[in-house]
Image: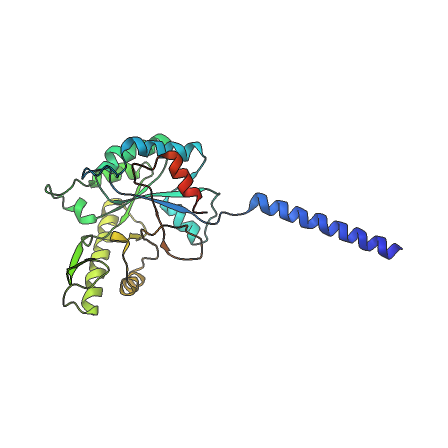
Amino acid sequence: MFRKSFAIAIGFIAVIAISIVAIFGMTTHKPRGVVVLMYHDFGYKGNPSVINAEVFDDQMNALYENDFNIISIEQYVDYMEGKIDLPEKSVLITFDDGYLDFYEIAYPILQTYQFPATNFIIVKSSDEPNPDHLPHLTWDQMREMKASGMSFYNHTYDSHKMLNIDDNKSPMLANHMEGETTEQYKARVKEDLLKAHEILVRELGEQDNILAFPYGAFSDELLEVMEEIGIDHAFTIRPGLNERGKQKLYYRVNAGLSALDGDALVKKITEQY
C-alpha cells in the first residue's frame, strides 16, 4: 500500500515538474530568427511600384505600433555569431546602393521612430560623384547619419554592373569577364572588395567588412575570395528567415514597394516565422 501511494505521489510530482518546464519554455523560448528588410530608392526612375515616403512612414509606424524590435547590423552579426541573444520580433532594416534619398527621405523618418538602419553603398558613386548618374550619399552625410545610429557597408567599389555574356546579362561581381581566367577573376574581385572596405574605414572608422551582393548574385569562386579577405557575413536578395547557426548568406524580404503598406508589411514579416 505504501509503495503504491509513494509511486502515485512520485508520478504526480513528475507531472507537475513537466508542466512547469513546459510553461517556462513557452514564456522564455528564443526567437526562431531575424527578418531582414530590403529597400533601394524612393522612385528616382519614376516607377510607381517603388516605395514612396508616405508608405515608408506607414511601414515604420506599423513596426513601432506592433512592438517590433529594430536592431542594428552590429547587433545582428553578434546574434548570428552567438555573442548575444535578441528578443522575439527582431528586425533589421537595410537599403542598397547608397542613394541620396536615403538621407533626404528615409533618415528623417527613421529618426522619428529612433530606428537604426544600414545602407550598403556602391563606394565609387560616393567617393567619385558623377553628375550624369543618380545622386548618391556624400561622406559628410554618412558621418552625420552614423552619429545617429545609421551604418554603411560594402556593396562593392565599382562592380555593381552587368556583363553582356553570350547576349545574356550577368552580374559583374559573380561572373568572369570575357577571356578572364579564374586567377584574374579572383584578383579583380578581391581588389574591388578590399578597396571598397578600405575607403569605408578611412571615411567612417573601423568596422567589419560586411557585403551585400549586387543583384543578389554570388558564386563559389566569389565565396572563396570572401573567405580569404575576411568577409564572414553577406546578404542576398532571396526571401526568407535568418536562423542562427544555419547560414552566413542571409535572406532579405523586399519591403520597398508602394503597394506594401504598414499592415501588409507586418503580415509579410509574420509569414516568415
